Length: 458
Image 1 (tube, rainbow, N blue to C red):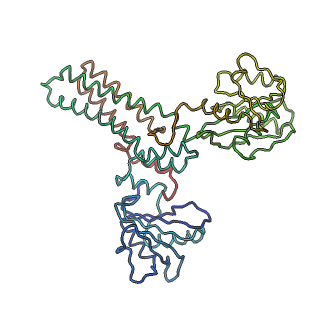
Image 2: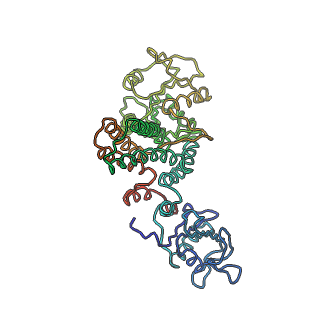
Image 3: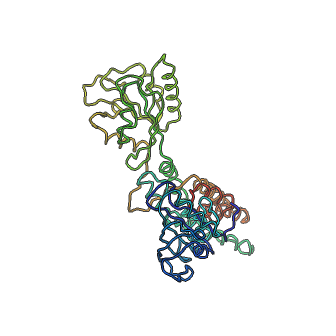
């Protein structure tokens, strides 16, 4: 994104489509000048450059001599804005044409169309937020459950940043001590001082390990868990999907082979986003279309992180079910016995009966227990409102992993009395890597990769 940070940028800040209202955001050094060129206030002799900060004004957006729309315009003066720059926000009627015409008038008045994530990028470059907080904005927008939302909010308010600063403080303190002795080689580091430095490195390493442990939970909250529902025809797979979603998504029919393709939908299971995949019933079929659906079922089975094997509780265990139980041994699986409200006829081999959860898709019996079992299988953490919780992403994990590896090497070198130049080199690598999490060390390519994933207007 080789664009000038001194440009004045503008974009639609609300979702595209028809709505009651839309917001066009303008940010940059010429925001008020651009605003004055397009805004005709109802109050005469009004100029945005003279308006007080955080005030709202009524008037019209003009395009030449023509009125485009009746609007409310908000004046926000730097640095108390989302970007730390002068900001103007125009609230207009939410028609797609109206919104586009207002934006075109703003662009014609001297603003440049903002790139995806450019507003948030400016907030980072201007020091309002660090890089991890900027990423949390995207997490907040895409959160699919309350737990994911809470984790994003915690990161936005700097919980992860403060943990990173603790690690950096330990590394900076040790590195400064080591480099001081490099500059004055006649003074050896005393054993007592070495012990203190090693303890600080151990403290930093323990904090890195704590953060690395949250990566799995972070991935689940951001991406969800892929859970495939498999079983014989008419075992209740589609009924289970509808029950988990809370609405009818898949066709339910007593006719075997109704489901011919995979169906994917995301459900909130006790705060965990789970992507459930309903599949065609597993059996031998001469129907070419059904056979293709069954083939796709096996592909989904291979890719699944969790398998819900649903078995008809009223029938004896069929050969297809027994074979599938054998095939998915050792996988993350949950055996679901459906139609538990009816007399049982199914006997599971070995200890599988104690592992299974009995439910009834028709009455809802056992559904709460099923949700708890699903969560227990895929989630080991706990995020609840009111606590400081962290869920790092893949980029954070990579940076912290590299920092931890360099720290271990540096600590070992220091404890063994290796040349302090080598110790300092490892500690500098560790410090730079951990700094990447919050943007203390960042490149233009890294920023482009992060902010290009944002939506327009953020």
